[in-house]
Image (cartoon, rainbow, N blue to C red; front, top):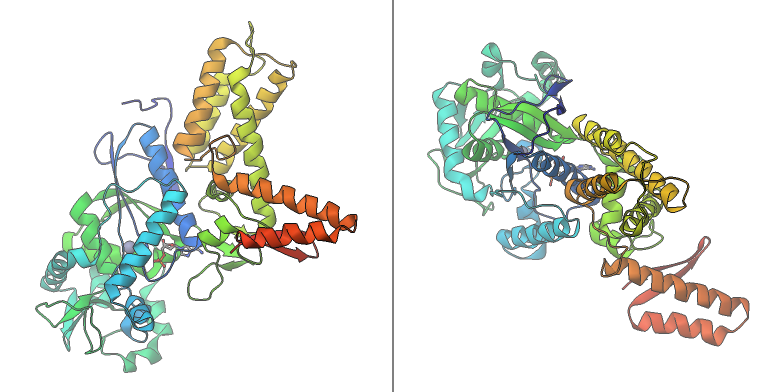
Length: 494
Ligand code: AMP
Ligand code: ZN
């Protein structure tokens, strides 16, 4: 194992609201669970940001030499809006709308999710369990919670008794919410519900006749609650206590709070040592979300087909843009910011490639081992990728200085520099050099179209409209549409 002794990985634990030294339960091994997507529509860039934040965590832990078991579920049943009080299962809704089987919806969007993650060069998790594949495990947990006295059955549904649980546990410790305040704020809701208290949440729901995703249980033909699946699947594959649980910030409450309550009700132990929460990607200052339509889809980005985009962007350019912000910071998506990141990434790749033909000398004009340490320091400080990237830019400046003959590097330092750049760029950040030959076609295509746009502009300036129209029409014939706007000409792929 190549754990770096002198370095200490610090993680920000949402449970304690502080940075803590990372100490896994089993030396050298890490168990990590991340809430996966609810597969009823295409993942948007916001979803992608969270999954890429945890891909970085996974990659860095592996890079440090840990044996990581990374479990990320697929929610293919039970994710109800408002705990089923109002609103339907989104997968069923979509199935009705498209007149297909719910499992066809699940399949379609699971495939999309995997394709997108593949394009971003995210590593697949070690286990990717589905909620529908773990109904028995979920029923067992419900039975256990009822036995322990923290759940009650009513009309074929089973609810977690939050008030009872809070008598001898602390409900709200992750989100910092106080049960009494929550109850005071929801008093008027109580009358409309079959629950004892609006804060109680469903462990099992009896299915209405039209609800076709249903399974037999001791209480009714029905389906499990959303929070339950993550407790069932995380503890099944990682044990009753495991190291890291991740997800987007918006899942802290109620989802993760309820996961803690369920596990504590069963086992009387806190299930997770480190809770990690990734912050939101916003668009026009508002959270990207499926429900509001305020989002950008990865394929729109890769093709340039969205009015806010001036062109197509390669997946790595978007990933680099996202990693230039820390995972716990809010990040606003914009075309300009993306373009700036793309330019930066190209500069970095130019510098990296020029390491191949750099001359070595008898001394080094910059301290490579100290620089290398700074890269680790950045990542050890709660996966601080923006600081890491700043270090990589710093190295690229040094490389250019040496290239211009204004600095020097020894052969030994050059080997370390190359290896460290490689490790962080490609192994830890998981970037892909699409800018070099044989790289991603998106960039080559965009270069070629930009060239044609500038030839067309020249033709138009010379009043040679036959040529300019020919360029526009023939590009359209091969599926590339030019759009003339105030800020110049852009294109999209049809
Ligand atoms: P869902 O499919 O809605 O359960 O979401 C999947 C994951 O994406 C969850 O971890 C969410 O917290 C996360 N997520 C949703 N919206 C955003 C956003 N705008 N920015 C970052 N992560 C998000
Ligand atoms: Zn979950």
